[in-house]
Amino acid sequence: MAEHINRKSQCCFLLSLFTGSIVFTFMSSTRHDVAEFVTGVPSSLKLFSNRDKPPCSNELFRSYYRSQHAFPPPGQWLVRDPNVSAVFPILSPDICSFPEEFLGKGFLRQCFRRKRVRSVLIMGDSQGVRYSWGLWQVFNKTFYSCQLLKRESDTTKNVADPRYFANGNASLENRMILGIRLCAKCVSYKVLCKGREISPFTLEFIGFHHMAAGVMEVDLRNLTGSTNLTSYQEFVFRYFLKDSSPDIIIVPPPVNNAKFREFPYHFRLQLRSLKSLIDDWMPRSAQVYWLPGMAEHENRRLAAEFVNKTVRGKLASELILELNQGVYKELEPGLLCEAGRHFGFFDLFQASVNRSEWSFDGSHMQPFWYEVIMSYLLQLFCVS
Image (cartoon, rainbow, N blue to C red; front, side, top):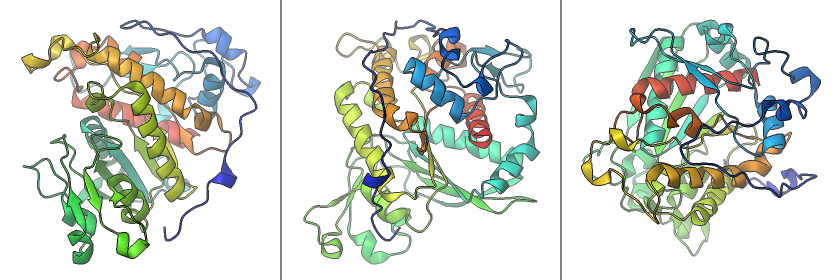
């Protein structure tokens, strides 16, 4: 986008401020009172029985945020056949439902055609790249063919690939100052998806292990008149994406990388800065989905040095839970905005905390998890 987008006039003013705080108990399956939530839901969205729930939607989630000031509880997982590994579990939320027809290929194709989706972006750390792989799988099963267009070439060093971000501009590539990226899996890539009855669209993953880390700085001072180097995050939103602005942005904040390094307050400030960059430089039509962090499982760790590791007397999952609370509090004004572009998702900490058997290495889940979560997020996008 060629020029700065003025967001100040588009701010959403809330008529009330929430003053209470949600107290969570570590490693518990905390569930909010659904009956209390229903009292604040419009009649068109109310629950009539456990067998007659409204479709899960951004509008219904907004009503939940307004009542409970937290990400919605995920409900329970239904494992249809534990003897068949190819059969994925089904999420059965307490407050809403995903009707069977939402799972069909035709539904998603019609949704992308109706909403004119041309570009999907995921940003994040090693969890984010796995969500992108899961989304790639969903698209391959739905749109028939998603082919790799480009990928960062240097996967042996923990640095960004300047050629990927310069897009063939040698002068711009020479202005890039590389920093350390503490995430070997955070390799950016872009795929093109094609299929019958849909227009082609792209899926891109852009890696960052830290919301404010110096993965890369770009010296654009002579071009912009600025006295400071341009940060990696600002460069991505202000320059790199300006000619291919995404319609959907999915951001799982990098809580797994931050849990041992960041205090919750600092992490929240970094999230605020990232959100501001999105609001300043991405088109108003782009919808942004924020995913809470998952629990980790000490009994599944592959590296012995990380088993039961504590910082400030807290295990990894306790620290992630703290960061998740800060994520929600920082996002709540945008989540409550009726005309807003920021949306949340189910509490993935609750969804994963009692599922150690699905953990791959203590920090990440098995591949099917990411595909299942992405399929439900797409349904949420399409219904809303």
